[in-house]
Each structure stands twice: as C-alpha cells, then as structure tokens.
Length: 118
Figure 1 (cartoon, rainbow, N blue to C red):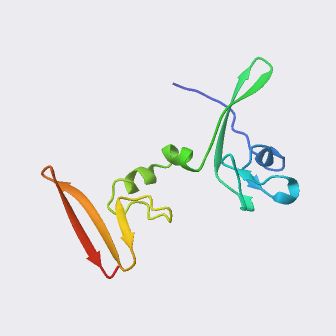
Figure 2: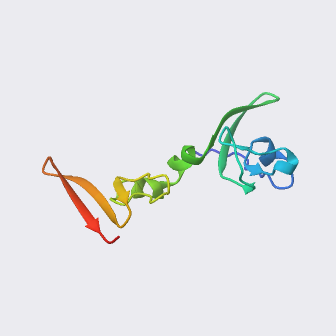
C-alpha cells in the first residue's frame, strides 16, 4: 500500500480552540473531553476528517483514554503489577497508607501479598 496523504498543522490558527485541545477561558475555551475544565493550556487530542468532493467532514475526535491505542507504552504498563501508577488508581493494586496489596494468579489459584512500608 503506497498511500499518500497530506499532513496538516494547527499552528497559527484557531483549530485547537475549536476542537477543545487548547484551553483558555479568556478565549471562551474551557471544555475538555466533553466536560468543563479548570485546565489552561494544551491538552492531547486526536481529530479525524474525511473529504468528500469539496466538503470536509469531521468524523471523529477523542481525548485522554481514547488516545491510549496510539501509545503502545500504556499497553505494556497495563499488564505490570504496578500498572500506570496514576492518581485515579488505574492499576491492579489496592493502595493503603504505608502498604500495597497485589493479587495474581499462579496455577489457577489466586495469591495475595501485602507489602508493608511502601
């Protein structure tokens, strides 16, 4: 497949404001990932467009978790015991002050270990 297509940039125009990836309340842009946000600045996002004759159609936009499929490092982190170690608890461990609990399967039997002083 020798596909060719033009890459375009959002530099020096309002595209990032229009599609809610540059957030600046003074310019009326404070919504990100379909929610009101207090963030100011650039955020990740992906938009897809389709050209049909002379029309440009917006077919898809995604933010945050929707971008994971393009970042293979997250797939690797998701299968490790400590996971991504994000503040929202997206991992397979239960965290308590000073300890962590990990569960894993060994020969079809679940094992649990509590690590103190973490």
